Amino acid sequence: MKIGIAGLGLIGGSFSLAIKEKFKNSFIIAWGRNLKRLKKAKELNIIDSYTLNLSD
Image (cartoon, rainbow, N blue to C red; front, side, top):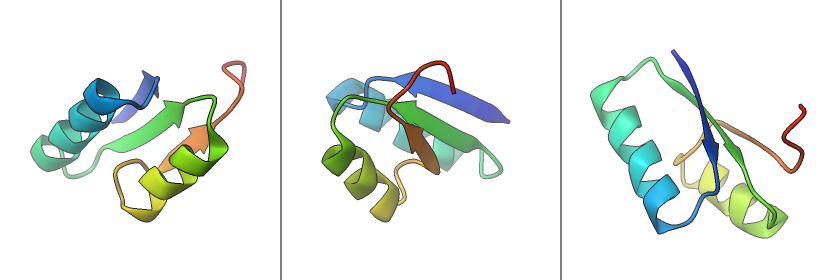
């Protein structure tokens, strides 16, 4: 299951973690404006992929 999250703040990050816990085979793609935060979220395994451009 692929899920996209627009905005990875407290709510988006919490939502991503809950989805990953409930659905072990999920793939979370996050969109955001802050590359540093997106990279950190991927490092922490909160998301699986990220983009700065919604058209990707």
